[in-house]
Length: 91
Image (cartoon, rainbow, N blue to C red; front, side):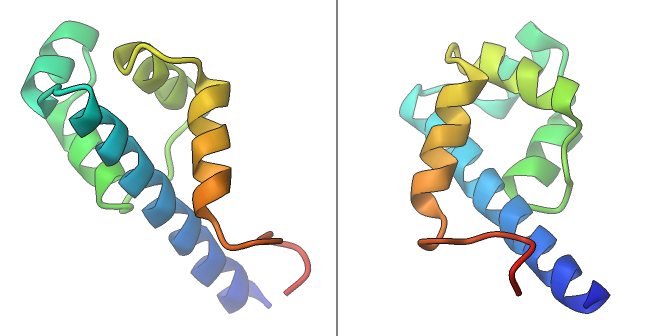
């Protein structure tokens, strides 16, 4: 059970990272520009975009500000990218 949760968590982090990367690229913003302007380290951005870090809520909020869009919109985009009926619990 714990192994399955870890696998699903990694999948979610990877999906979130891809979503954040796509949104950043769509807005033509470099990691360096965002890091400097919004005080989010390049390392955090790189880890997030590669799905290697499970971000804190406050980090997600700052990312949404850097991408100039509500966090709820980022989450809605992510939900559309996940497989239908995806969840942690019913595995």
